[in-house]
Amino acid sequence: MTTLTVVMIGGLVVIISLLVIRLQSGDAPLPAEITLPAGAKAEAVTLGPDWIAIVSQDNRILIFDRDSGALRQEIQITK
Image (cartoon, rainbow, N blue to C red):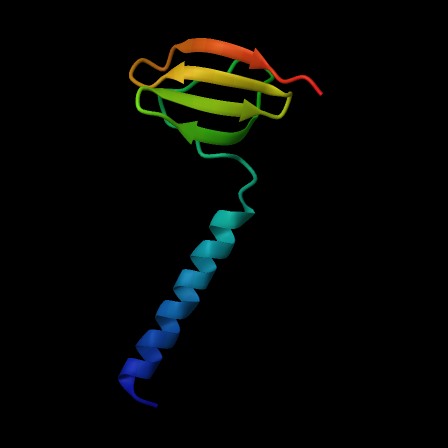
C-alpha cells in the first residue's frame, strides 16, 4: 500500500465519521442570538435576508429579527 492510499482511506473514514455524528443530532442548529420561547423546540431553521424563521415541534413558525434576535412574529400552523 502506498502512503497516498493510506491517507485517502484515513480521510474517508474521518469524513464519514463526521457525517454520522452530525446527522445523529436531532436538534436543528440555531444561531447564537436566538432564544426560543419556553416549551418550544426547533424542528427546522430558514434564513432570510433580515429574518430567521424557526418551525417548532408544537406547530408554530417563529420569525426572529436576524440582527437583534427579537421575536417579530408568531404563526400558529393549523391542521
